[in-house]
Image (cartoon, rainbow, N blue to C red; front, side, top):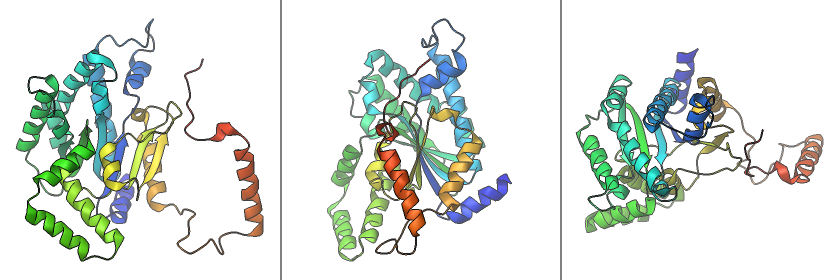
Length: 317
């Protein structure tokens, strides 16, 4: 059954199923799984153990996605705001944690699972002072990437770390030769279909951002464990404009997702019929009875403000 589903997914997406994963609630994940029997469960005493535990949970998520037929995975691991909005101690911690993605254990994981790793956001890290830990981590990530033996046909795993898409695009433009800019202008001028123009620009700028060709993502998986619905993946959002993809949210920390739930999401994404119309209106898709029932459902929901998705939720006992 597993291999059959994988084959169906690969046939459905010959360009390679591409997903964006904004992993949220990592500290909560650790607290719930490892600290719930402590007098002060919210206090994380050993951040090295915390990092090691989370890395293993990342590996499980990655293996599940690829085993279900996924080909390209973008994981938003750290936001640039994380270096500033949670204090110096947290910034130092997450800077050290980035090193786990390129240590020998991770390198072996990539080799064992036929994965080529990429890092987007290195340019942002290198904006920091050269003697800062953030800059030095950026150098280490770049060095790892420069020496990795990339090979066509492998799974692609993009770690999004502290990316600033507007800066990346600005740098890309500045580094273009006049001939390259003229080539882009010529491509745009030769096309009268806005879809073709957009995809041409996407291909150029996504390759500059990711360091490889990544198809336009097919879906985004985030968490609304706190009730609100956030988009936490700056680079894929900036490149795709939020278009062409489905969005899914788990009501719990991302790393608690099971293989069965992930398969359910992919099944719905790839094979389930959805209500839409490519015509001028919805002629033929409603009956009088159906439209009356839908009207009553909408009016009932709209009468209750709390049915709005994205409202905040707090932990209650």
